[in-house]
Image (tube, rainbow, N blue to C red; front, side, top):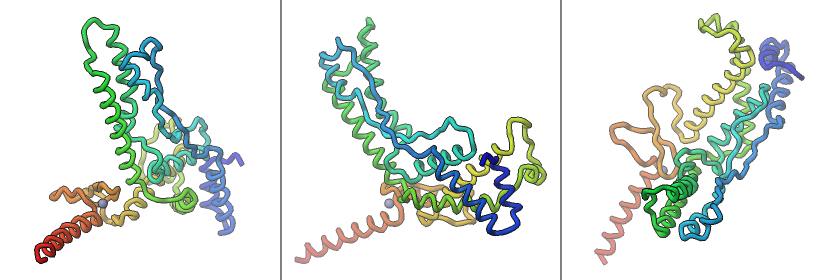
Length: 288
Ligand SMILES: [Zn+2]
């Protein structure tokens, strides 16, 4: 049970029968998906306390509605260092990144959520200063904070539209397929060193780190390709020089640098149709 990952991969590579290979793969897959390092969504609100003596001021009252701002997160690291926990963590993170529309980890979004807290501390600090550093009235502050949270909500909705639809069960199935490819394409470290003439710092890397990294990088690549296929953009020969754009609807599209496109094909078609319909509508109404 306490096999190293490179041992599992080598056993698979050198297994004499297909049945044996199947058994090795199945038990690896089980180790990952039954690992206790499961995906957990937790509410980690952004909170602050208003000093009691400030609570009854006009501005303190405005801030009091924002002392706890709800935020859903999914832990992206683990303290465990065994390969199964680490690869499971990688899988969890990939699911969060590509498929979970409830999680938004974008920096601008987080900055907006943290703004009320930041402004509170600025205001509080300004009260202890001689010169005037705080210029917002209670009304202006209320408007600013309301606007900030509306903007955050819009950012979150945009991010959600950019996630692909895939259930966790389907994700496991697809990832298992990628694991299988990684098993098949595995090259032991010595072989890799020989063929690629890679200089390694002895000690800093061991065989398992090498395997874990190989799996993580491999999954990254497979899921990037999955995303391209999902949006109908996958082309094995394209790679360098290709840039992608995001449409407001969430679709990914190929960016054409000359035209600086803003809309995906579907939205472009729709926009064209609605212009055409408006034009037709006009024609009809002018006839009658
Ligand atoms: Zn679109």
